[in-house]
Length: 545
Ligand SMILES: Cc1ncc(C[n+]2csc(CCOP(=O)(O)OP(=O)(O)O)c2C)c(N)n1
Image (cartoon, rainbow, N blue to C red; front, side, top):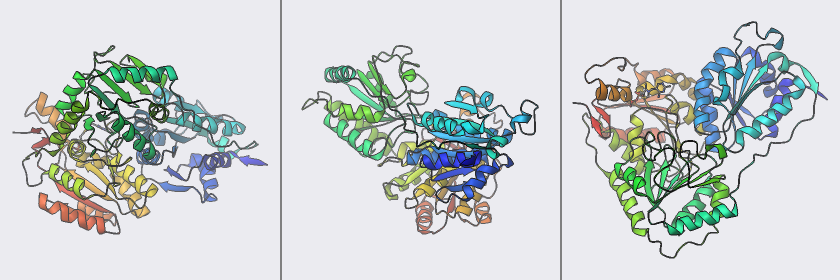
């Protein structure tokens, strides 16, 4: 039977197990919206701006392990969505962005909102393409699902001209795409085992895509059997329980200097799934490029990533799942020589994340984060965007379960609120907290409307220092006393939350934080808590005179 292009798109979503999509509507993809009208198995959440929709799709994919789906219109919609697409690219998140495009007959006339999607997204995504024949829509969708999930996952963008979607064709519906994983070779695993047995100061850095809760459990068992110290890559702090005796802390922005020094002294660094990117390597300073001093075993699902910046002594192209399975069969020594090294790594982490950090002002944001660490359930999901407020979070919070951290390694402001909305939609029984600075929140603050409409009881924490604090910190370091472009005049955030029909509270002393949180945790609707901090508290380690 002939189907419309719009129906073919929705059939492909259903065949691939999609239950949630995010959009801002456009007249360019009405046939898809119409097909969704009769598809109750897919919940369509309508965001207020496409950047928010794309960030929601990213967070949904991170949390569920299934591709995030985002529908946007051409020129302005695709441009807005780019912010979230870039997050997905740098975080290796499987995502499919469907862009309603102008009709094929008007292409290259600079028609209303026309945009060259292939040129726009280029090699920032795994694949950007335009469909120019209705009958080939199932083929393009099948490839999109396959590419987004295989190897190193990532975003795929498909431009769908409106006549492709309204046109009809007789086609066969494709079954779900099966993502392909790379497996380590037996020889590679033998060599890995030999290198590890010969080491004296091994250290593992975990991160990247392809994890799940069961995998983390098997990884913990592996680390225990080998008594390995485990650190987590930037914003991958939930790949290993931070309360575990083998935990060495996170290798990210504002790294514990003791951990940086330990990574420098290690005689075998094992990077598992992590990309060894800018923030994980402290701005490419922890290792020498192209050949690190430390022997390096790098395990990554994408062969092209191995040797991208650092030439590994032993490159292993494998998914973390396949590697952990193979590593489970290696014989570990009864009492590894590095047991004390591992104990010291954990002690150094604890000293760092237990240290009191006195701050000017009536609210000590670090102590508030410690309240969260001591009072939130182990499976609470914390989301954030970019800003120095996150430095306290990353240092003092202890992630105890997989996917309790949803945060962009690309450092994109505005991620926390849309990510928290997507998280609560996917996991309604879990506590979800969005964290943002005053600058960060305002990047996507209009998603408070999406939150109110979806009626989700999340908590939004806004750490308000009336400035773009991170940039002010850099300014103070390089151009002291010359404030330029970094101060902010803000709305009354509490009144803003109430205008959206949400609860709002303001916290002006550290002692007020716990009770405000308790009230918010017990509330049956979303609460925004504005926390007033002193602008002199630039970071956990830097106070302005
Ligand atoms: C989309 C985007 N634009 C600009 C930046 C650059 N940037 C990084 S942090 C920051 C300031 C964040 O301010 P705020 O959210 O108030 O947090 P604070 O640093 O004050 O804690 C800016 C502008 C960015 N990371 N992302």
